[in-house]
Image 1 (cartoon, rainbow, N blue to C red):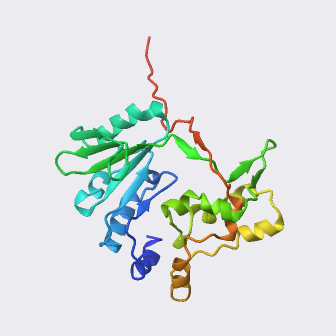
Image 2 (spheres, rainbow, N blue to C red):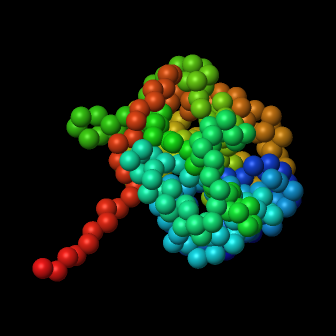
Image 3 (cartoon, rainbow, N blue to C red):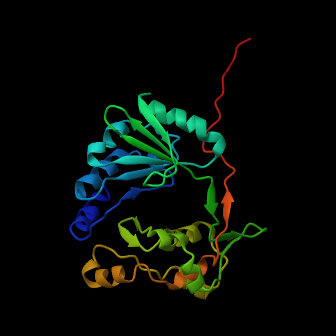
Length: 259
């Protein structure tokens, strides 16, 4: 309800070819079904809405099965962050598809997923990836618990940026950002206070997203240069390392046994 007015105005101005709803964990949002159906309604010409989830709550959202209407092109992708969780996540996917689905384990699928589950009656697709390695964060935690950022060559950092490479643009609170970190680093600073110079702090907060209100004056220039380097690229590493994830998103199941 809060976002609909600004998204309605955006729908008059831009085309979104592949909208993806991300989190945190989007299935924790109590309005996720409204987001799926609302985005599909506002942009009826795109290929459908993708929800990207960790899969833990796939059976806990009323109306999700119906909202992921394959006739609308909607579908859900599951990122499995810990190999030990795979079989439990698969069980939840099968339960979500009412235990009536075909399965294909093929990493050569056109969208690149490792596992595909398709409901046999309505053709609803659930795709799953083994996503147990993440690139390092641009946030550095020191031994004393304080946080800081990189001071990289921005050109080198931009050349290796995964956001740039995969054209992952973000709309957050109604503003369009070149990348997620440009939006979220200031939020992190407000909570944890980066130990950086005053000059760098001003730079951190200087990025201007494109808003629907300034689209007519800035829109053309913004999109013409959306893949270009920005000064804030200095806060990201020049080279990325992929490291395995060790945590699990699944809660342990406990049984009380009377004796």
